[in-house]
Length: 332
Image (cartoon, rainbow, N blue to C red; front, side):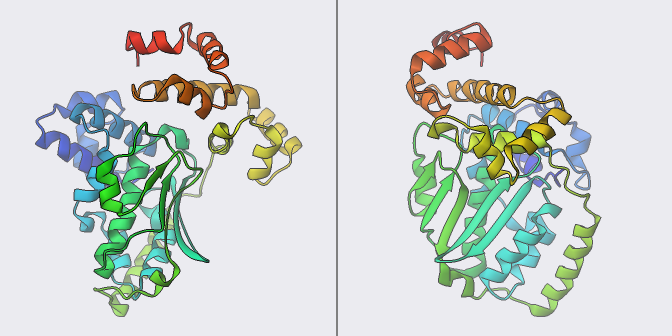
């Protein structure tokens, strides 16, 4: 579940553009009443679907980015203020890593220091391949917060996202100040390691102590993580698909278990590794084919097929049509 602030930002933009919101909400399983009440929490999956629908209605294929660039940060509420009142940027990012689940239970915000300072995002309980706009919103917003809180035009050393786009978006590159890489195995941005010592403009240790107590109380009230095994397997597969053959032992290892343990756990839930892999490939194929600029040969590679003919054969088996026929029909 999520607080739904991102959904409400999208709905506000739809309304400002004169788009009829109620039918769109109905298609994704939401209601105007849920959106109107800021205390109501929404499922993360419905929020992802809403952003997809809103992007189509607004003809804004970069909706997550444009919302992150334009929104009022204070609308986030408690999480923003506990960041802003911290002493340093490193302290602020550590607060987000600990308390992000208050606003979105599916998003895992990572922070680590080494040769560089890494801010990362991953999903728990939600298939990563199902999303594009929410993850873009969060990563671009994270960079924007770093700049707003320090008053400095921080430029990342790198900025990467796991999903694919057929071309680099120039507006994103201008905003970030460096290359934006899609199709990576990680959703993250890297800063100079010294950035963690940057002082924050609105640091207030007394207020921060109070807000940390409120965050701890809110965190304690959140339900325990109930990550589904299928989703964990899908997310592990998606990160290695373009690199060739997907081996169950490699996926098991990435999940911290043996191949036998993974097979047993899948069997307990009446799941099959091969079926999960093929369904994931089908879902991704449909999503990629929706981008007319993404060549079929590139899609085949992204899905782990060495030959376009093998992908075409598999896609016909899944859908009864070839990739080209599906595109021509405009079915998706």
